Length: 461
Image 1 (cartoon, one colour):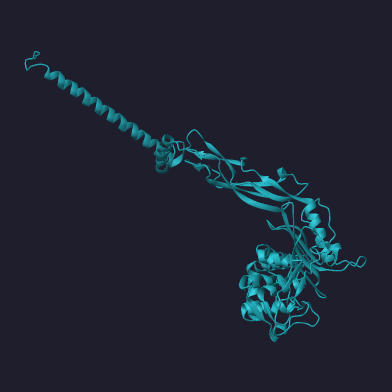
Image 2 (tube, rainbow, N blue to C red):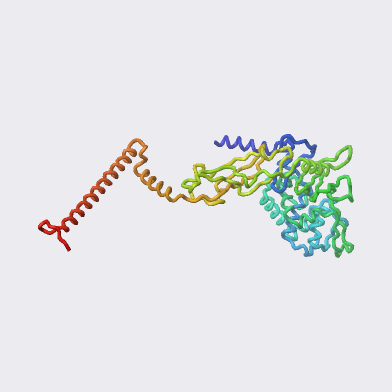
């Protein structure tokens, strides 16, 4: 058994850390050319993965780290509080790394809200340390809380050692885990407003009286830098770039009622066009997703999917089972909803006891297609079935005797006892009838005797 467990563990590790060269997760879809080291495209509403490439391999996230720093800063801090920069806020900041213009200085007093915009929009590194120290008391305490939060949201292959994403061999994540972080941001309106801000004006400070103008590093949402990258349906979220990490981007896009999330890690620069592929490949993923997928109804709550026998039902010996709710799913355009596999489970396949109330939960259906699962829906009774009390009483009596003596049709000892019982019941019934007959006859004789006098003559009144 131990050997089998070791083999299984080794196999799972192989799957986790071996590059996944396949692209889209459905058959018969056109290919999309993604050259980044890792990439994923997800339908945010249901977490359905539409495209995956090396999504479980560990990568350096660079400044994508800052989405979690911003998220915790928003959740635990007061945006109106003033934060004063101290020397320790710059302890791990590398000269020439990402910062606002002019750079934040020791002694500068900035609101927490402006620091959050500095981190999320302009990707300032020192601002991240200031946010951490202010909200948690120290950067170390903040990082402990941040890693705990990562575990809570399901990031199993992520470890962050700093607030900003500057290179560190112990600072890593995966494309899938970054998606989970992005999903948390989607649920926080304040963070998403920052993530989708093109330009932001900070308030004047004691050392920067003119304030600062921040411009997003995300070229998908601004024409001010390189208009060739713009994607009109994009909403945020965060860029990242170091020599070790390559070009990284996590982004969201909304179109036709669909919300897709893309993560691209370790992208390069196209040698011919000199375009940064983290932007062009993210745009290609979104275009591919919107062109090839749409939401379709795969379950109608009015259509019966099964029936179940009703025991002791009044004028009804079975009841239909219908879905408790309808269900929609994002499917490739070529898939016919009728082809969705429906695995039905009836909780009591041998039948249910009457009475049955309309809406009673009696089963469930699991929907899937080509290995993709779309959910499980409970099945309910489509109508009420009353109980047949006469039939129930008869069956109760029969069952009582069957338990004691067995059925008359049974062979062996129990069958014999059953026949003996019926013979005894017949004998008792005959005796009772005989006694009643004798009593009736005697009563008639007594009445006849009273009608005559002792001489045998009839008396007249």
